[in-house]
Length: 130
Image (cartoon, rainbow, N blue to C red):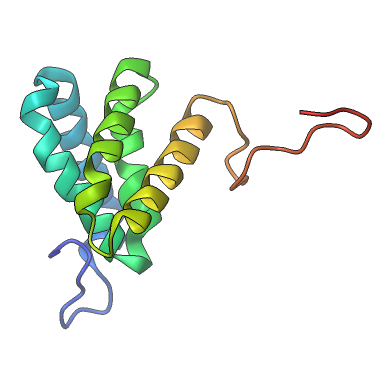
C-alpha cells in the first residue's frame, strides 16, 4: 500500500508522474517477458489493492492497462486474472466484480472500443435497438 498511502506527505507516490512512468515500465517488462503463471499472483495483489484504494482505484487499473499496451493477449490475460481474483477481493466478491468491470472498460478504451471519457458503452443511435 506504500504507493497509495501518502503517510505524512502531501500526496501519495502513485500521484507522481515519474512514479507512474516507472510503474508502467516495470509492469510492461513483467507482462511481456514473464509467463502469466509467474506474474499472475502479483497482478491479483495489485487488483486487490485497487479494491481497497478508493482514491487511486482508476489510476492503479490504468497503469496495468497502459503497461499491456495494445497487446490483446496480455489484456485478455489481465482480464482473466481479474476474474480469478474476484472471490478473494477485499470487500467481497461484489467489489472484485466491480473492479473487473472497471478494468474491462479501461481495456475497451485502450483498444479503441469506447471513447476514453465514457464509463459505459455508447447508446445506439435513435431508432435502432441493440
